Image (cartoon, rainbow, N blue to C red; front, side, top):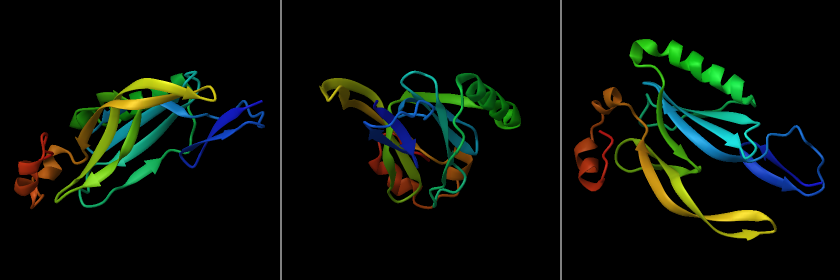
Length: 167
């Protein structure tokens, strides 16, 4: 029996494994934000397992990412998001940003970091029963919030070069 597992944030495939309680590969993601963090919520294809990646927005010169080691059910993940929203109500709560299919990476020019997301994909084939996708659309999201942007020295130079400047 074949299975996919998530180990240290990466998807691995084992055609001889019989583990049915492993989280599998994350297939779709929803990005949420508070004033201090982004929360990338990923789910597997069967919508059984949910994982959380927390990305700091307060320090523009450093990239601070933390993967929550817990694997959540849908209801547990909804409860976690509700608690995050309640805890951040004084600063605007938790807001939905976008749906995506993956993080391409993080990039830094002169100022803050940006997160590059795959926001649209199209299937171009299959290999051994696994769908293969091409990126149809991507989005570059600035990590810092607007109050952090005020203190960034190179923002004018960076903003000249970017279609959607962070600051």
